[in-house]
Image (cartoon, rainbow, N blue to C red; front, side):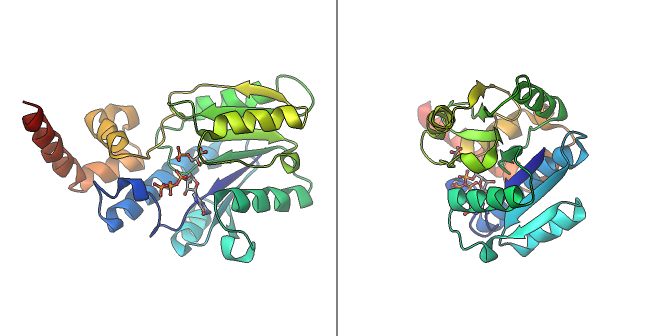
Length: 233
Ligand SMILES: Nc1nc2c(ncn2[C@@H]2O[C@H](COP(=O)(O)OP(=O)(O)OP(=O)(O)O)[C@@H](O)[C@H]2O)c(=O)[nH]1
Ligand SMILES: O=C(O)[C@H](O)COP(=O)(O)O
């Protein structure tokens, strides 16, 4: 099993958090989340290799630090998440690797047991298969495993879960949809950050929760919550 981890340039990542975080904080938070994801992936015995795909030098340094491979997005002639992941999967297929996991970088509650469960489910029957781990809203695709990866047309964006499931039917692959509380928790909106701040025990000891604790984001978030409470009152 090889894993593709797409990482948007840190200066442009997490735009939907702009109402709560400064540009530096958005980059810092994403960097911390990438560390949490790489920590789990790179220590998992069923994962032979991780490829970080990005055009950001900080993501390249992280890949080096975690002994992952780095694929420079600027050399792929691809723009946007779908094209970038498609090109990365193609590169792996050229190397004879066709069982591929694609996972997002904004999953601070990812854990070893859920990765094991996803891989076991995917391998539960022989033949082409697509295993999908949705977000909490059951709309997005936070993690997918595909065999053969070269057959799928990646369809990230609105309602990608349904689109990916349709893709599986098109290529005659078995579909597994696996709901997971850790991998299902992606950080897209201010409320997701506030949930982590309110329940730090969820991600205790992890880079993301430590980053939130060490920054003044938690204090600022409390003010925002208090203000909205007083408006409601
Ligand atoms: N390499 C690469 N990764 C991307 C690109 N767009 C999104 N990603 C990554 O794909 C995963 C899911 O990203 P999204 O949630 O769609 O986007 P985001 O940057 O995290 O958040 P927003 O800016 O708020 O949309 C994350 O790991 C992103 O870093 C891209 O153009 N290139
Ligand atoms: O299809 C998806 O999963 C999205 O492109 C990325 O998900 P998000 O916007 O919910 O993070």
